[in-house]
Length: 117
Length: 112
Image 1 (cartoon, chains in turn orange, blue):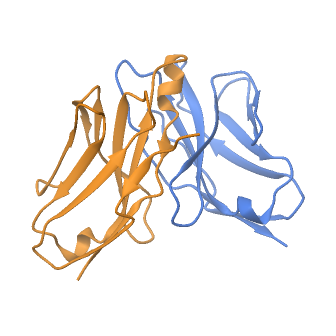
Image 2 (image 1 turned 120 degrees about the vertical axis):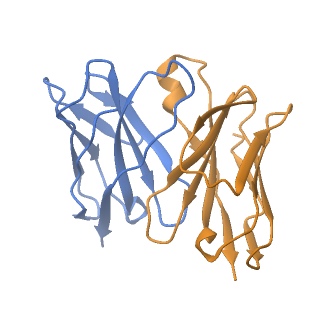
């Protein structure tokens, strides 16, 4: 079965540079979520999109932005990178098909590991 | 969403059942209990969810007390690959898309 695809898997950047992470949700999933997980931390919700519109916003820094495109893939853009942005970034997708309780069944990608030097 | 409380860590012998408890004493009538797990540095993985009836799937069983104030996730025959952080999350049905909030889960270590 198709899974959530994230790219790149690993990314190394310098401070103050810009990074872009991409996420391709499971086909026919209508919602995409972005999470950030720092070393030794639990995943923290950043932002979500439902049918290409921003749905919820969590602890996403102003230096970060995201969008969902017409083909449902999503991109997380991070500017003026700081050392503290080094983390695993997970994308997840879900759908309300099959009952709304299923909308809380998120499928996560393998993550993108960002290292800021 | 109701706050959930889980033990910080648990050990389980390989091949034995792993029983992971979760307290959610302030859960409301329309909140489901969801369980996810995260194997080290991998994306979190959905396990099971339920409202008030016990549920079973190919991965685990979920036992919810009659008053719904607590639940137990049961992995019937734990393997080394089940070593992970397990998260119990209480969540209402979404009126719109809703995110999961991961709190402090239980680090389950399956011992050989």
